[in-house]
Length: 570
Image (cartoon, rainbow, N blue to C red; front, side, top):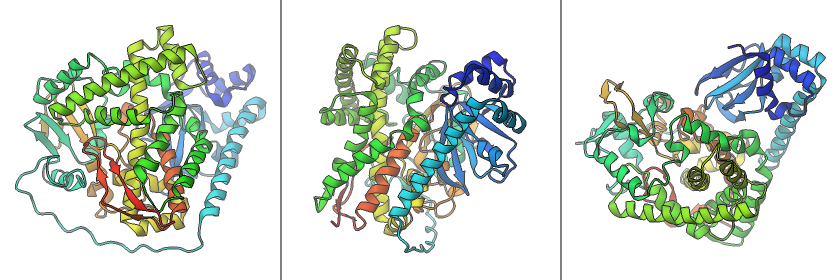
């Protein structure tokens, strides 16, 4: 789609890449970048090896970069992609795939050459970006070289799991012994024998195949707001919980449909772009190193209590500008509130979630009041100023977004670090392989996200009848996508889907962050925290071993450990 020059110029002026360009040169960019293209999640923007005929300026959304199927990093709003191929006149060196809906402005090779000749401030901007990327790559290579060992390890192929016998009945039963320690046995039975499962007790639907779960996340015709759902035991329970909370939590962006979802997400997206997140690495590495220094004084530790929990909480608290010293209360509230998003909860758990929500809302209102009296350069001050303006964010929305960011901002990473460390310790050959080849780190984090996802379910509501796998799902039905089951689907991942492989090609195609417009806002932050935390942990304690039996929290949707005791081997 072609845009007017003025519209293009204003869009480009907002991009950080061109922030220091003069108006005349920005007009020249506008003249050659008036074609706009849009890519949906999963669509390929560039493929490695193809001729470089143009470059893209990302004005909205996020894309992932891979080489030979292995995840390298992300690019997002305000960055360009493809300019290296045009500068060097070589084929594409990487594949770029849309992770969320992505909108770009297109500059063809001829226009790119003209800019280099005629727009010096644009040339400087592009060179700054290229040089920054080269510096980052050099620093990463140097860091990995310092960590790497010359020894190599060869991992033998494991035999395929024995075929499973068909069970007498197929259902998802969290009350079954051992479910929280290993839900994947039930997932496999559902995926094999009843992949489009109708829970007659709750009158909900559960999808467990990879292709179905991916399609669920990308389907724009589905809703998330409970108002679209028909009467059912599950919906009645959810509406009763929301009634008790007097509307609180209903305005969190993941519970809203467009246009409200779009508006709310836009308020905070710039804080979580890949580029913004990369800037946090030095602070994050410092926090990790300091925490590991403290752990090194011990022979044994609980990695959840001593490492996985305090680290991401400190990071999101820094970003938001939250006060210190309330970690214990926040952890208790978070556990109770997130339990309420499980597909089924007890009356006691429902009441506990309401009490925790009230307490946390009251706490956050006090923090917001203090921040307005003493604003700072942080996300909370920015959001509070938007609420004060009364045009972009109202007070109730502010409290709900803050609660979501605070809880989701640390819960997912806690679970990634805990689940990931446990998986590596249970498969020591993979622990050793990662230790000896730190260049695998980014891909290893993707594989750990696939292998034991921090989030196990996503929910949508059918606004009209639809057919999935030959089954008719009626309008108004609540549909759950089992992210954990999809991530272990042999039809997508092969016969070794239940095995951890830190070098697995295509590991980044997991569905652990959901999909479509509701793709996890903080995915780049979670990835970075996982890379720094797990990479540093593996190098610092190469002889670490499991201690007591790990303890999983009794939550279905957010899967994580409540305790992970290890011997550090110090």
